[in-house]
Image 1 (cartoon, rainbow, N blue to C red):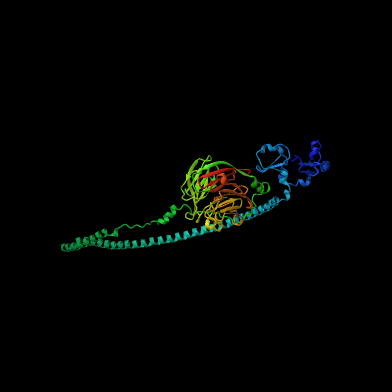
Image 2 (cartoon, rainbow, N blue to C red; image 1 turned 30 degrees about the vertical axis):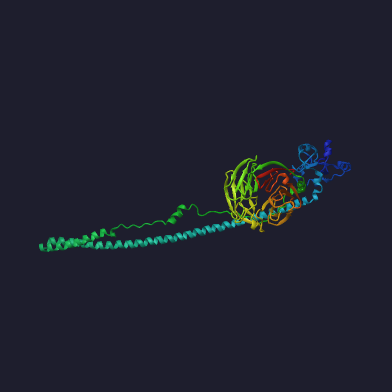
Length: 561
């Protein structure tokens, strides 16, 4: 792009300053009135389209900053490299010697403004804006709902507190009433004794006065007889005192209370009034998605479908029978699951043995789910669980109870999609373990599944079908060519949506185009395949892994992707 849009580029090179009136995108410079006329008559430029400079300046800044000439060589872009997804000038070819997908850029941009892909972008932008608006509205509604919910929770907390207070007040009244009753009861007994003692004390004092008077004024005979009477009375009172001292009447009465164990635990063990729970559930909103627009515009899948090839990179002896699943780990290791050995085996990048995971019982398929974790299905209805395994520590991290058989499995955005045999195709969230039905039609006992974008692909070996559906379960296409693909038992998808299927009985690997209309046989029995039972495409490194039933696996570089 010229440094100054308002200055005529031709005149500027002649050190003359003139204002530009039009802009030529092919020349990538502005033109004044004089140069415009020459530009329109020159044989080299007469077919160039020009735009009034005022109109051109209405383009967004990001569009104006797009360079139409190679920054490195200062030459016009003439080619486009599909492999590196970038435009090239003629001198750039030196950096793309090994790239087989160099195309004349004029073929790529011809009628681009009226192309279906450009219209698709416009439509997708509208849908994206609509999705944003719908999501924003839902979030705003959630904010309002949270505010209302807080009021309800505060009221519930207060009501519960009042209920507790009322109950404690009732218990307090009851215990105080009981204490009062016991006090009255014991006090009554003590008062009765005190009254009796006072009366007897009075009688003894009276007796004492009588003795004194008898001594003073009575005869000896009267004194003797009186003494005998008083001795009997004294003996009687002493016996009374002895009887009291030996009875409970002289026990010291005390009143106390013991806190109920439940109430004591309530005050000591209870650390909080309650627990705040924040739950999250999937929003009932359907997001419109048109898929990978860039792939529609720049990288036509039909060309890749026709041109790529496989190159054998490595042969691995897994020493496992009946391999039903395989997956790549980010560090280059490969994981295989064997239904006959009931274990998951990890193989190093060089093909040597790493470790075995045989702690989970029956196994079927395996898929990498991130954070050095893998998910392993368990096959038939006897198990009904999917195990999440921490590979470095070789231990079960989590067990998902799915209440159905589970064979083939794939992973997408925090969710496992698995074949539930009689119950169809299911999806379980790793976050809250909620299960969603995608399809309800019965699947085969060896069914396998893969995903790409917003599409799912699953194979049914009973009728030799490969089916593509959307995430809601709507069937988009079905591939059935038993003469080419017999008993499909492994399935995977590349970045462009091409589907790789292992034919167990046809002893081959077939790739099906993303629309299900075309197919190619990539590998056959001549390439050493015998009963291939699992296949996995490494989308990061463009590798294809094929494992057979009898202990061999093959890693291929995908050339031309």
